[in-house]
Length: 428
Image (tube, rainbow, N blue to C red; front, top):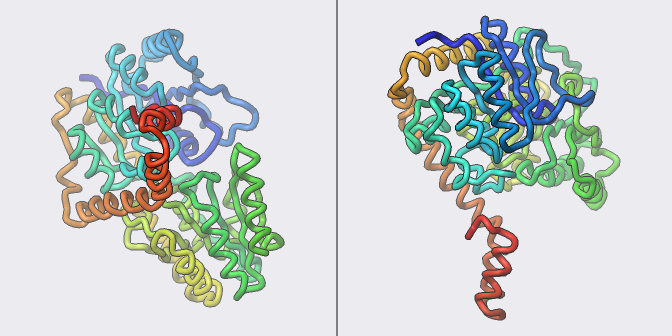
């Protein structure tokens, strides 16, 4: 069987966050490695798109759905002589259809898992295990962003699974330019999604602000919903720190902020990779975050101080330690930067070459790297994350259970069932 010459890769769009940036960077690496690359989206390019595709990468926009989308896929598979489809949007409603069309077209398929296996328990937007795992047995391989994820999915679905970290959108060998007197900015980077827990970051900063009059919290991100943006602005006002919290909005170039940052505060409770951690490490910026030990970037917590989820006081104390000891801050920054060496892009592209060779030369799909990840450490990470995610789910949804108990005692069960079904039809 011939080796791969042309890679087709799909993501909904090119504007937004980490996945979009990964698609742009990865397509450039594939191009440099000698592959022809076609990027598919179903959102047209606009002038405000964050991430430009490298010169030489072909971009095609698919119809949103239906037979027009299927026809466009079939036409492009033939015209562009695509050998493999790398799909980045497994939570898209079109995922199953896209995989089916690709198989009809006689090409191999790879799905990249951009959410952790525990995502549903954390209320990740658009994620539902029961809906999206169904097409997975049809794909030829999966790429996961940590060994823990590879162990879970490989054991669960019995498909060829590979661990490949996301590519880095920067050169790790670029010298650090940081002036310790330039600012005492604490950066928070991300979308205003519920699992990112910006409110926890603001609470932690409010504690820090009582002990450090020069520290600022700079928030890089926003929500598409204006009421969410207004809610966070009201919150900082209520805590009395509105004059020291800067809402800088979503930024294409976060490097300009990282060059002058004292620390990076991350309060997400669920991630699969968290590219912003890599960006901070590359700039020698120490990280304070909730403990997510299964992440590839938090391996050994090099350059990182952690607190357990919900421990806002712990986050604040870690930030104070960094702010009050510049030598400790610099040591953490150096540790973080060195920890990126095994994740540099040359290794990433070699790993992708191995995946593409494997799926074309092993048509039975019997190859598996699963034994590489079957260690006591990774099994422990899986078990810990299953326990932690369910504890989080139960804690966050306790009020719903109490409400259900109250409703059940005051209304007929048929009415309660209709009430729930109207709001969560997926449960029925």
